[in-house]
Image (cartoon, rainbow, N blue to C red; front, top):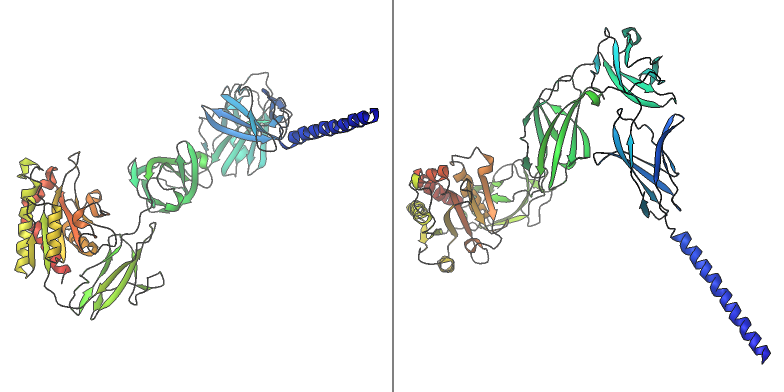
Length: 573
């Protein structure tokens, strides 16, 4: 019985020993794999030999310390060290300038802990006055002024040219004069270095000897706050004489995110689109620099908003594909400027290896033309397919002028209601079309969209055109616009032809922001929805609540109506 008892105690002891050993092993393993950082603090900044160092207390398991020196909450200097003594290599400041220093410790797993304190540090070494003139000539002594100098201080001043020391002297006062004879025969940048008694460089100042002066920059365009799609940005300016390098510095907030050299062409530079990100506001600082002397560069600044990358407008055709006369020369176009149009005639989708459109294509028989357009800094357009059929057919058009009898325009121009004036334009369109043998149907103002769409389909209209005028909440917007369902709608080509021709006689066509163009309703408008109508478009003939637009409409009802009708006639051949 006693033997069994002893045996049991022995087994329990062994088990306990194993458990205890495993526990110690597990604790050690966890400590090794996941070391915990202990709190630490910043103690001081001091000169050690020729170095300026930052001292911190030790944080257990720290493998790296990261120090940041901040001025007005902006990081102006950052460095790392694997010890508690952190060298502040090449850090200089102005005398009596105050900074905040923060340190973060990291362990091997990149876990971190911030110091328990922040150190307020004031730079106490004497420094060169930074506001003095950098330019000198070979017949001019170099004069340096010190701030924070005391007679008991031991400083030395040195001059360097291309990293070669050409002068050295002990500082005996706050004003330092170096004879012009020291730099005879030199030109370009001369660097003055101020060293303290520990042989540490505490301040530097650059003179520029016989250096061409860069002309001051004056911005011509774009205006501050300029908005554009994702695209090249052209900076036009005056000045910059003698500069042989130009740099575009791109800031997001206060952070410099990109710096590129740009080529000056005449009085402008082009910043390429790929220097920007989409949907970002930037501050662009243009630098005009002689050699690499950025310190004395001339600059200008402008704020721009870069939008999204747009898609190249689709290819449209000058004549109707569904019935066309043999021998008709068809043009392929895009509303995007400077596009390259590719096309095929064998039914395959075009690529950049396909035929390039250069001249009108003569249609002598049934043909399928597939197209797409490419332009710089835009996505490629969608592929549009045009099935041309050579046949004769009487054109049928359904006109649907506005029935908005409570939508008033600018009364002083004579504009009454949208319904009344748009019906007057429709009268001219109808008369012109009928005089050219077209069958025309009109909507009933007392009806609704469902009835108009149903009637248009019942009479097998080849083209359904809703005619409206526009309005805005500010009563200041201007321009024409026309809607189709989407970029591949059957109505795209005829609508674009109508828009282009009407835009050519619009009095504000020199103002790009008034060019509202061809827009896509994407199912939102019943009279242009491809599911409801084979070929439907809705035109907004200028803004009836803006004086200049309303006046133009009232003075040109016949001209506008004839222009729309002739666009339809030319398209349907």
